[in-house]
Image: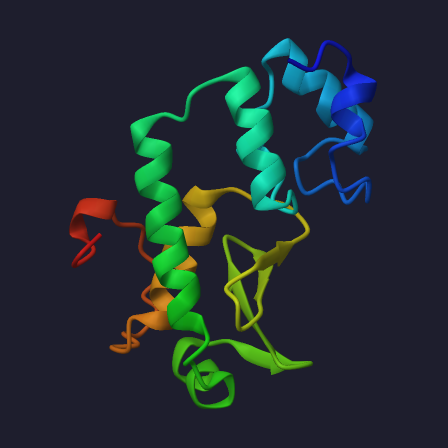
Length: 155
């Protein structure tokens, strides 16, 4: 067990990237102890450290495991995507061998490993639909209309 935030902090990437929506890795460690954050909220955590920390804090929810497996599947598909061909079909643009998609008024940038960067959301409920859209191959026109996940084929 990791009794202090400092001991947890030593296991974290210590980049203070704020992808977890907190200003620093030390703040994340404190939030983890307090139960306000989950281990999976640190996207840059090395898998073996994530397993170690998760074992000490909470068992993964079956839905979280399923979601992680689905994201992993989509991320693997990204390796085969030709961004320069796909970008014009989905209203995206390519820069520095990454594809940029504007959704919900914000830019979401993906690399060939399916990693997402954004100035706002770093959570699966945003990552999954955009990764699905990039990798699905039908490249339907963007309508601007909101639909539920049930309306997305294989969603």
